[in-house]
Image 1 (cartoon, rainbow over the protein chains, first blue to last red):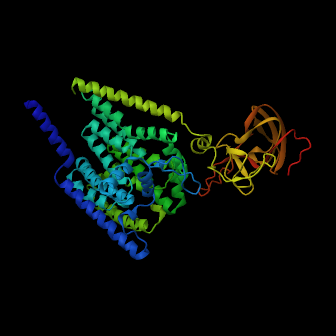
Image 2 (cartoon, chains in turn red, green):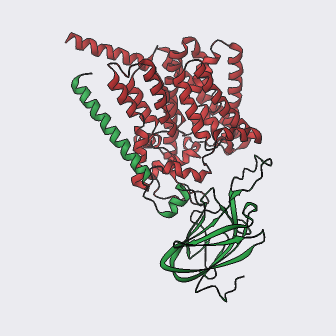
Image 3 (cartoon, rainbow over the protein chains, first blue to last red):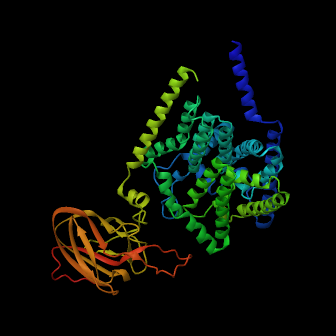
Length: 379
Length: 205
């Protein structure tokens, strides 16, 4: 009886530590969330003063990809393609977990679809800040938290946390997956990855990080082998469930991939995409530079022995890059290994910290204003 | 982990493996129509629900017009519409394929107005219907009519045209990142007419 009590008590203590870490991390996450929201609201007002036609209500922030998620919340997945001038676009490209949670938000709070999507993304923004800061504290130490917090607030493409996109949910689940992995909580890592693979396709690539960590710790042969294997098998569950649904709904389990043609996304050599972007100039050059930075960060993480982060970042960069440069900054600046790598790089380098944060803050303001001014390079 | 926990864990693992195996099998056997397959899966056409215009097989397909005539169900293996017509594009499919709404049978005269890309000069173009293949030599860059007689013993709805030497149009050393045209062009198709009977005495313009 006593042993059982100790076991439960120990489990409860471990869970509490996992959830809260040291007391200041949740508080820091709340402060970061408020500052990030303040930044967006301030620059939204500035954009409104300069360009007019800036959304007033929360739901009006929901556009572009958020608009597609709204179609899923309102009417489920399309039976046949219908949108875009050619009529070849459908909402199959958008993964189900985020709109599913937004549906619950809509039902629970009785709000409009756009508002439900924006609120859901903001809720996960707060959770993702907490989870990422917990991970940063664990991987880089307490002294890294000021920079990590500032990076979250001034994320150059942080606007996506406030406008009904999946990025915050993805960052949250990815941080939880890595956090669980570092603590060898295999089933939790597998379950979080299963959820992540139902948010974005790249989520399933976490299986590679999982495999690296399982091999490194040697637990694949130990007493925890059963949990390690089951956790690994859980990783693609979200993606598999979505594919199964698409097969019975549309007749094509890979419809989410095939419909990309409606956005002119076709498979190409990712390195050629970078080279072409650098040669073209303008925003293409910026997109290519961000993608190249992500690959460089992956190499640096591998050099530092952080292979589990390196391999995930490599895959999560190459996969979208192999269909073109569009949206690359959004993908890269919401990747846990990239943000964590920046935190590691800046940890003991004050000059670099200020340089990075200066760039991030300037870009963040510019991207926020551009978003509300309707510039489509931020899609 | 307790022994019952181990059993549950193994059963769960087995169920997940079965699920992934099933999903993989479903990936390999999509239940979609030919139009969906050609546009989304094979990428052998860039036409999705094209504009339709009225025309009979004898009046033919006018590739300089946007869209497809009503007697054609689908078109693949060709590039996008241009003011003069369309290129066959081997990056999409080795041959141009025309799916007809009604089957052809008996004596059929197929006439194609086309011109070869540079790599195709003096090379053969193969035209196939219902397992019968015939060839013509595409001489130079001027568009010309090529007429061929077919005697079809079984109904067929598929007409294929295959250039012998499709090649990337742009030349080495002239690569321009702003114009990444990677099409493998073989034949410039302008018109195709399909008439009953043989070609003797028929004139095409």
